[in-house]
Image (cartoon, rainbow, N blue to C red):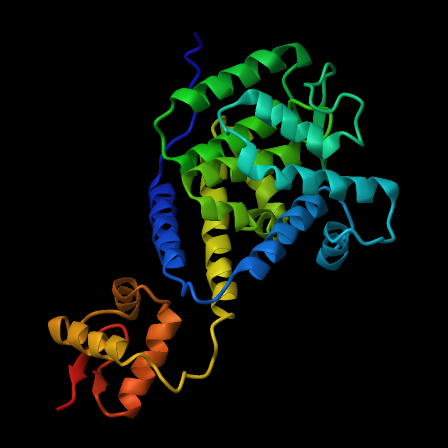
Length: 329
């Protein structure tokens, strides 16, 4: 039995981002359930596919990828279209993957690359280097080492008690370092991080982290190179946690766009009464805390507070940051 443990260090930055991510996930749970996010989830799946393929040089934008998803005919090279179709199939099977199962990862690679590689779903049997703008930036381990190295990292996946947020980043880096396939390594590495994150919280199936990585592509490669230089994945973990953090914030912003901007004429009176009572109990209560207690979005609470202010039922004394609420008699 292997005793391999990937080298990394838990830093204050990692702890900070992990804590913030947990809070954001809690916020997402309280987005008003009355407003469907099905369209947003489809849009985000398209963003994930578009982002991960554009990183690899595919020229299709979100509109074209959406057309392929909808079964429409689009103009493009055969390779680009096959890349899109492979990615669609790989992501459509997201809920069926077990992140601890090496065979499932091979299956995902086959979905992605079956029309593009003769040995899709199988590890490489040749040596490879990873190129950058300055030439070869990383020489991957010899091909005869790949099965053992992949076995080690999956064994670690099965026994580690590290937080899955961190595990997802470590695996992503280790996978890219090993570079086990002739092609498609970046796509599989990003997909498998999502698979691990989905095991942590289902919502990650619809968070387009790949799109955010594409928006910070140079920093992505820089973090990979920096980790390779120091011999541990710490810089890459910090970078990816920041990317996850930004992705969740964007998801919340997009979700709240579905909430009507105008205050409803008939705001539930019981909720307004509850807000007043909560403010009586705690004059320093925050909008976010109110949203959590009432199981609505912070945007909904802000609208309710605006209505209460207009009716001269409450006032804010001092700033939003350091002030407090007072109930008007």
